[in-house]
Image 1 (cartoon, helix red, strand yellow):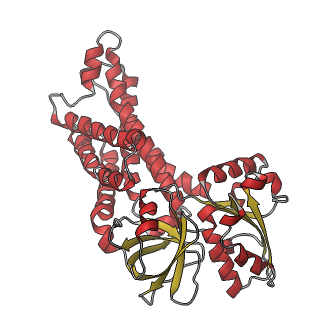
Image 2 (cartoon, rainbow, N blue to C red):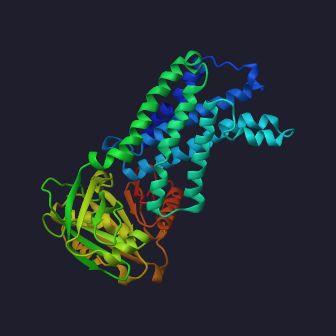
Image 3 (cartoon, rainbow, N blue to C red):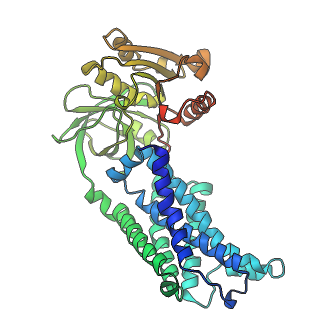
Amino acid sequence: MKNRDRYLILIFLVIVLPIFLWGLSFPQTTIKHNAYPIIVYGSQLFAVIGFSLFAFSFMLSTRIKVIEKYFGGLDKLYRIHHTIGKLAFFALLIHPVVLAVRWLPDNIAKTFWYLLPVHRKMEINLGSWALLGLTTLLLFTLVIKLPYDKWKITHKFMGLFFILGIAHVFGVAGFYEEKPLLAIYFIIISILGVSAFMYKAIFHKWAVKKYPFTVVKIDKLNERTMEITLRNESADFDYIPGQFCFFQFVNEGISMESHPFTICGASKEGEINILVKSLGDYTNNLYKKLTLDSAALVEGPYGCFDYKLGKEKQIWIGGGVGIAPFISWCRDLEKNSMPGLEVELYYCVNSEAEAFHLHEFQKLEKAPPNFRVTLSCSDKSGFLKVRDIGETKNMTIFICGPKEMRSALLKDFKGLKIPKENIIFEDFDFI
């Protein structure tokens, strides 16, 4: 199934279906609203869409493998989750604003107070409290920009505000009688939404299997980047080259946060390697304080970044620690060659001193697979451009690297009208 078809199904379930059910209910406006019918209808529609989006945003955050595979990887799933969450907020914000502006410009004060929890009816106040809570969380996310571990704590309040929203919806007088089909739909997505929130916030750490590993080697490649080797203490752990896992390191001075890192292969049986670059508070702390023999809990693997799903002719573009999945693929090709596969790898670094794994790729150039590596150093030739790559038609292009590099390349490939299905990228900006 193409990505477009997957998104169309999602749009139908989240937006089209609830609007259709709302329309079947023959919504009525009454004199108590003191507003034109179009204003009331508009407010109701934004409420219906916003509530549906809000419920589905919880379902998409669960990391359930079936959902992940449906959307083509956890990074893409989380981007959809973030987009749906933002759309839900703005739809729910417009819902009361549309009703409030009917007093403008004559009574600005009444318009303002209408948006606050000062109504005579409790169910209306519950909706106001829910919206104020969502607004506060959005400020923490977009304006204040809390550290990731603090932000995760505040994000758990989303479930509380969703429950307040449920109470607001089902507390409205006549909702069941006037809109029975919509009420059934809302009951279903409310149960699913609350269940998804409870699962992710409370039960996830027990429900999802975490594999025990031990840190057996720490190779500090430079002052910011290190390669960690971990020994598997569980016999049943397996992964596809290019996938990533969530790692929790049990080490004094390091928080028990769970962070995603791509497995860049295995140095020997029963071990895995990951590349870590100091880019924030957590990774900086990890670089400084991680010690040998530290325990690690590994959740996963996740991701659908797999060269075996591409065409016979491929282009790989990796930058920074985004080279990790390509290292994994390279090591896999050494063990399991694929006849007919032709690969051009572009290894993007700031300087040649940062090309830590260049020797592995150069070694593969001499092996039977048709493999060629090009080192792109920004200090010598600037950042890699699509014009530096050459022929790209009828080839699968894999990209993993910093956001700026990825965005620039995707823009250039779009200008060349390369089909979207021929470009596969992994995005770690979802955390």
